[in-house]
Length: 102
Image 1: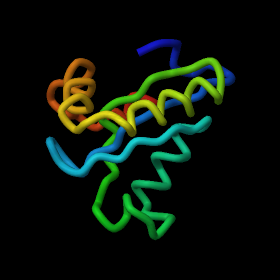
Image 2 (image 1 turned 120 degrees about the vertical axis):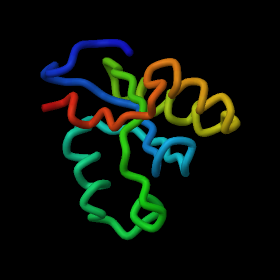
Image 3 (image 1 turned 180 degrees about the vertical axis):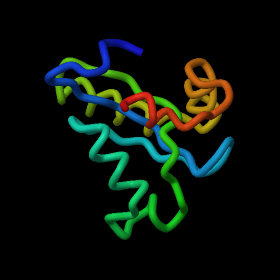
């Protein structure tokens, strides 16, 4: 993880899971608290709502929107085993990291 929580301007690449070793979803945002809250509240009728993917299991802080988006695009090309390894390096128990932001 890079950066400091609570920065005035930060951009995030993140991975959500439906549970340990469950369905994975990768994206990026400039407001992780709001965006993950939207996933948890199933605000949009999309992939994450349909498959119950709302557990924040990994994130990385970037200084620029372009950095976050580029990282998202690279991770989306990875195979599942690489994504699992990335998650488990930061979060071996697959805990929901969302509460860290409060």
